Image 1 (tube, rainbow, N blue to C red):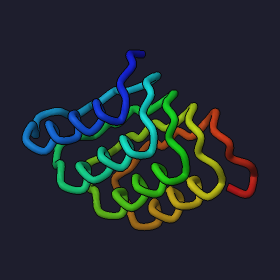
Image 2: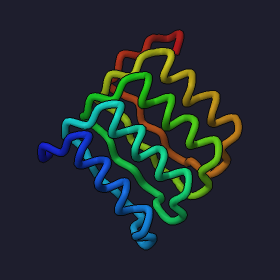
Image 3: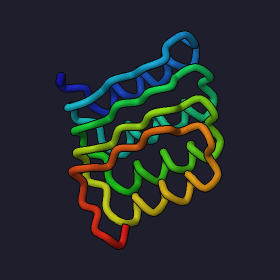
Image 4: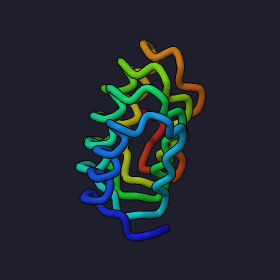
Length: 120
C-alpha cells in the first residue's frame, strides 16, 4: 500500500464525482479511517459506474461501515466491496447485512480479519 489518508480519500471521492468512467478503485493497505470511508460513501450515492471498491487493510470502523451501508441502500452499480482487515465489529456487520436486504446489485462483500463475532 501507500500512505493514502482521509485527505487523499476525500480528493479521490471529489474526483470521482466528475470522472464517471472509473469502474474499480483500490485503496488497500493505506491509512483511511471513517472520514475517508464516509467521503467515498457519499460519492457512491451519485457515482454511476464504480463497480468495485477495495478498502482492505485500512482503519475503517463501524462508523465507516454504517456510511457504506447507507450508500448500499441507494447505490445500484457497486458489485464488490472489500472491507477485510479493518476494525469493523458486529454493529458494522449488522448495518451492512441490513442494507443487503434492500440492495440487489452487490455480489461480493468481504469482511474477514475484522472484529466480528458470531453475533454479527
